[in-house]
Each structure stands twice: as C-alpha cells, then as structure tokens.
Image 1 (tube, rainbow, N blue to C red):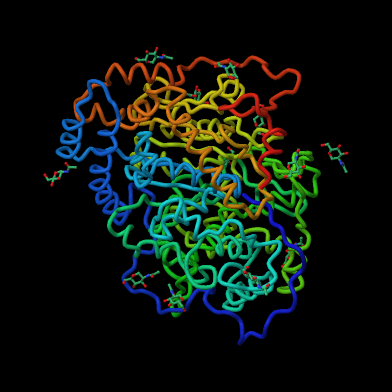
Image 2 (image 1 turned 60 degrees about the vertical axis):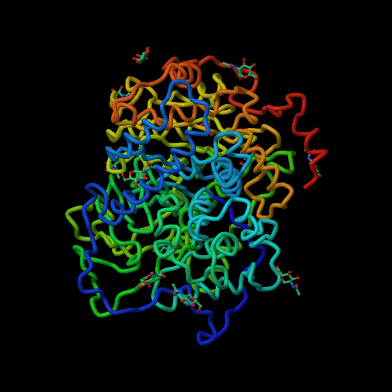
Length: 625
Ligand SMILES: *[C@@H]1O[C@H](CO)[C@@H](O)[C@H](O)[C@H]1NC(C)=O
Ligand SMILES: *[C@@H]1O[C@H](CO)[C@@H](O)[C@H](O)[C@H]1NC(C)=O
Ligand SMILES: *[C@@H]1O[C@H](CO)[C@@H](O)[C@H](O)[C@H]1NC(C)=O
Ligand SMILES: *[C@@H]1O[C@H](CO)[C@@H](O)[C@H](O)[C@H]1NC(C)=O
Ligand SMILES: *[C@@H]1O[C@H](CO)[C@@H](O)[C@H](O)[C@H]1NC(C)=O
Ligand SMILES: *[C@@H]1O[C@H](CO)[C@@H](O)[C@H](O)[C@H]1NC(C)=O
Ligand SMILES: *[C@@H]1O[C@H](CO)[C@@H](O)[C@H](O)[C@H]1NC(C)=O
Ligand SMILES: *[C@@H]1O[C@H](CO)[C@@H](O)[C@H](O)[C@H]1NC(C)=O
Ligand SMILES: *[C@@H]1O[C@H](CO)[C@@H](O)[C@H](O)[C@H]1NC(C)=O
Ligand SMILES: *[C@@H]1O[C@H](CO)[C@@H](O)[C@H](O)[C@H]1NC(C)=O
Ligand SMILES: *[C@@H]1O[C@H](CO)[C@@H](O)[C@H](O)[C@H]1NC(C)=O
Ligand SMILES: *[C@@H]1O[C@H](CO)[C@@H](O)[C@H](O)[C@H]1NC(C)=O
C-alpha cells in the first residue's frame, strides 16, 4: 500500500496513433483446447509439476543449509537421504507484508539475509533458507519484491538494488521521460492504449506504471512485461527460484459504502495470483483460470466473445499496481479525517514532527481530476482495478463474481490481513514452515508493528477452518516483545486452529529498529543508496539476531523449525536442542494482556535495540539521508 503523489493534472495526450503501444493487451485468436477454468481442488497440474521440480533443488539447498548449522544430535545425512527416498522434502515459504516502500525494502533485506549467495548470510548460518523456499508471497508494497525478484530471474538483493535505482523518484519530480522514469503524461499515454483497446482503466494502472519503472524489467519501464512470462525465465524453468504468490482483495456492490467508495469486509474474497493461475480458494470464487489468459470475460468457463481473445492483460505493472492499489482507502481516509479507510489500521494522516518517519499528505484529488479530464472517468470508475471476470455463470462462483462482467480488485491488505499468508496456508499447498515478515506499520503512530495483522490471519483461518497456529492478540504480542524479536508459533499441534500438525509453523519477524530507524514514511518515493544499505543491515540484524550476538543458537533454532514438520514423516525425532529452542522461542499459549502502556496506550516507540541509548532524534541527527 502506498499513497500516491501526483504533482499536477495530466496534460492533453498525444493523438491515438502516436500513443506508446505495449501496455494494452494484444488481440489473438482464441485457443481451442484450453481449459479456461478449473475448480479450486488441489493444485493445478502445472504448479504440482513445478513444485516437484523445486523439491529436488530444495533438497540439495536444504542439505547444504543444515550442514552449515551446528545441530546437536541431528544426523543431517540421514535426514536428507530419508527425505529423498520418501519424497518428503519440506515445503517452505516466506510472506512479505504490505507497507509501501518500507515493506518492499525491509522485505528485500529479509531475502538478502537468507540468501546463500551472500557470504555473510552463510557465515551467520541463515543463508540457504531462501534457496530452500518453494513459495514467496507478497501483497501491496510486499508484492514489489515478490514480483520483482522473479521477474529479474532472481538476482541477489544487492544486484537488484542496482536495477531498482531506488534513489530515483517515479512520481513527484519526474521532468523528462527516460529509461528509468516517465512523466505523468507519458504514463497516462501508456495506459490510454489499454483504454482504447476497450478495457477499463484506473488509478491502479497508473500507479503500476510508476512502480514498474523501479521494479519491473523490460523496455519503457517493463511496459509489456507479463507476470505469466515469469514461467519462461531460466531460473523458474530450472526451479532455481521460489514461486511468487500475489494477493488481491476485491469489492462488491453490497459491501459497505462511504463517500461513493466500497470497502471489503474482513471475510472478503482473497484472490491468489501466481504465474500459472488466478482465482480463489474460498469466498465467492472456488476456481482458477490461467493467468496468461486474464483479460477475457468468460461465461460458464468459455469466452463471451469467441472470435477475439486477449493476451497480455497480466502486465506485471498492473499486478503490482493492483496489489498496492488502495486508492479507495487513501481517499476515504483523507475525506474522513482518518476515521474511515483504515487498514488493520495503518494511518496516512498522522501528524508527526518526525520528518523522516511521517510526512505530507498526498494530492489525491489531483489524480482523480486528471482521470476525469483525460479520460472522462469519475472517482468510482477509477478507484478500483477492473478485471474482465472469468468466473461468471459458474457453479464455482457466487455473488458478484457469479453475475458481474467485471471484478473490482483492490489492495490485498484491505481485508485486514496485511501479511500474505492465505495462499500458503491452503491445505493444497502443504506448506510446513513460513517466515512471516511484518512491516505493515500497524502500530500507530511510529509505524512499527503490533502483531494485529498476524492475529487477523489466525482469526480468519479459524473462521474458515484452515490449519494455522493460534496467535495471541496484539497486546500480548507487544508485552512479550514478539514484535521486536522473532517468534515461532504453532510448533506444537495443540496450539493450532485444528489441533493437529497440518498447520505450518510460522516464524514471525517484524521490522524493528536494531541498527537503524527503518520506519521511514511510506510517502517516501525516493530512497538513497545509503539508506538502502542501512535498511539491509537492519533486516540482517533482525534475521540473524545481530549476528547471533543475542543468542548464539538462534540460527540453529530457525533450522529446528524448518525441519520440524517433516521429522515425523521420515520417522525422526525432535532433538533436545530443538526442544530447548521451542521452549525459548515458541509461544506457549500464555496470554499477557496487561496494560503496559497506560500513559500512552499502545504506543510502540523503541530506541535502537542494539544501542538502547540512541533514540530517533539522536540517530536522525547523525544519519542525514
Ligand atoms: C536424491 O536421490 C537421487 C537418486 O537416488 C540422487 O541422484 C540425488 O543426488 C539425491 N539427492 C540428494 C540431495 O542427496
Ligand atoms: C532526464 O532524466 C534523467 C533520469 O531521470 C536524468 O538523468 C537527466 O538528467 C534528465 N534530463 C533532463 C534534461 O532533465
Ligand atoms: C515486448 O516488447 C519488446 C520490444 O518491442 C519485444 O521485443 C517483446 O517481444 C515484447 N514482449 C512481449 C511479451 O510481448
Ligand atoms: C513463453 O514461451 C512460450 C513458448 O516459447 C511462448 O509461446 C510465449 O509467448 C512466451 N510468453 C512470454 C510472456 O514471453
Ligand atoms: C462474509 O460473511 C457474511 C456474514 O456472515 C456472509 O453473508 C458473506 O457471504 C461472507 N462473505 C464471503 C465472501 O464469504
Ligand atoms: C481531525 O481529527 C483530529 C484528531 O484526530 C482533530 O484534532 C481535528 O480537529 C479533526 N479535523 C476535522 C476537520 O474534523
Ligand atoms: C460515476 O459514473 C457512473 C456512471 O458511469 C455512475 O453510476 C456513478 O454514480 C458515478 N460516480 C460518481 C462518484 O459520480
Ligand atoms: C521486553 O523488552 C523490554 C525492553 O528491552 C524489557 O524491559 C522487558 O523485560 C521485555 N519483556 C519481556 C517479556 O521479555
Ligand atoms: C502442548 O503440547 C506440548 C507437548 O506435548 C506440551 O508441552 C504443552 O504443555 C502443551 N501446551 C498446551 C497449551 O496444552
Ligand atoms: C475457532 O473458532 C471457534 C468458533 O468461533 C471457537 O469456538 C474456537 O475456540 C476457535 N478455535 C481456536 C483455536 O481459536
Ligand atoms: C495494534 O494496531 C491496531 C491497528 O492499528 C490497533 O487497532 C490496535 O489497537 C493495536 N493494539 C494495541 C494493543 O495497541
Ligand atoms: C531529522 O533530520 C532531518 C535532517 O536530516 C531534519 O530535517 C529533521 O527535522 C530531523 N527530524 C527530527 C525530528 O529531528
């Protein structure tokens, strides 16, 4: 989620013939033998095959990762050979929360700290977990790394920063169009081509174009790069990267409406998008359609217009623009003085003197006016990302998704779950272990984290009957310092929603100030290399617990959680070292709901964890980015 900054209304566009082509979907003849729709039962054949291939690669990476750990009484060779023999390689994933550029960059720091291509990560024995992951999910700002790393064929984090060039602002200060940024007028021209091809466009298209100049490879800011195109990249084909899963939420006419804008309910349908498929596991849709063929309205699983089909609707820029397209929320928050449009409640209107953390509000009306002037479209027509609906008239869909020609999609955070765990906790995916990276900035007003978003996923999982660890409410999370230090949930089956070991173990890690204040404003659209370096070091400190200085056994404890669920499947036992780890780091079910913040309820404002004498003001004075 990222509030948009636009400095002025768009100027008149070039004539139709001169519009830059490439963003609009391409008309093609309809495929004859395509299965347009499949029920949401199990994995698609494509994903199943890919996961089997990935498991073989993971086995080798996991072996090397475990060998680097100092595991007591654990026979890694025996474990690996049993996994190999029984095909029981654990399925692991990581999930990067929403939170604008903050979560995008701190989350990239997580990826970096787990990467076996970074010698320091191997030295700290966290390297190689990345190579052992099968899934990488993202939503909103977290979708940017989750789409960008795969789209660039999975370079290292340090390499990708050179592609991103985060120091260039793509929204506010662009005066000329180059390979690295485009003016507002040029971005409007790019999306105009899609409009002229007959597709509905909106603010998500525009936002996505701006983000794409940073995060998506390809000419003109990845103008025609598609998300399904990831399937063609060598490291995806060779199973050398995790598979991205992106979450999108949706609004329906019967949802709550304020100032003409809709707000999804907490049980709203969560859409799941991979390079293979788009659809949902629960809610109003129980079906999937090929991502490559998004953009075609279907009725009962067949194209409504069988003479022309469209390909290329799934532009990667649209994916990241839609997943982070919370315009309805920003607008509501701005017109309601911060009482409506709250995420799991991330505020954009907090006034604060801490200039690096929170700053000016956006010119939201300028953007609405620009769409009105340029395209003659009003607020309600541009506030959501409109997809032609593949799910109409299916027995597998209900409500609006059954009847409406379009789906109205919004930021994946808007159902209150800002950590994109939903896709990974579907039983079909059999995920054993998930690292949940939380930079959702839900702890007002300083934009740290209080655990609410993880708790919300537990509530939703329990309500839906999905296996998930039991998570305590945010007060306990804060009182026990779980939002300042990593914590495991669900190690023991008795602390899961289903009371058995189908639930993954979740390692929750929240962005917190270890060596730097990384709660910079999500209004910040340009970030210096110096600040990026500090962000990466801070994430590394969180993941490694300050190079193991907090606890020399921490890296081993992560390894214990990674292998835990698979042990029983291969007839091995939890070691005493792992027992010790879980006693120390796995929540035991005890609540601590004391009011520890009576003077200032809920205000989380820590000083540097590695240097507690240094508060924000002191740090800020010596870190002038
Ligand atoms: C798994 O078994 C196959 C065939 O038996 C072997 O080629 C491969 O090297 C093994 N993988 C690992 C990581 O031991
Ligand atoms: C155009 O933009 C590029 C990159 O944003 C910048 O390097 C260049 O100096 C700009 N040129 C002019 C004439 O403003
Ligand atoms: C995107 O455009 C480039 C340059 O015009 C072209 O080479 C490439 O094939 C296009 N890719 C797709 C997926 O259409
Ligand atoms: C991916 O490769 C296939 C087969 O070579 C090709 O038909 C398809 O157009 C490619 N898709 C993209 C998005 O590049
Ligand atoms: C959400 O819950 C309401 C009330 O129980 C129900 O009517 C609605 O169908 C649910 N929505 C979805 C998408 O499951
Ligand atoms: C907006 O809310 C703040 C407190 O959150 C209050 O001080 C201010 O008066 C409100 N402004 C309006 C116009 O209601
Ligand atoms: C926008 O236009 C549509 C008709 O195209 C209308 O139904 C809707 O009420 C309008 N919204 C606003 C905010 O005026
Ligand atoms: C949480 O951290 C604070 C500050 O470091 C410390 O005073 C407190 O004892 C910690 N609480 C727990 C339960 O560890
Ligand atoms: C859950 O099970 C573990 C291991 O059997 C046991 O040590 C623990 O006390 C149990 N916790 C609860 C809350 O029942
Ligand atoms: C799950 O929800 C049900 C129904 O509200 C409730 O009775 C049960 O205690 C919940 N289970 C857990 C583990 O939270
Ligand atoms: C945690 O954050 C949420 C969202 O901002 C808020 O509603 C909740 O009150 C906070 N919890 C505590 C204990 O402060
Ligand atoms: C932080 O430092 C910047 C200069 O780098 C300054 O403009 C700003 O006022 C400082 N903020 C605070 C709260 O000291």
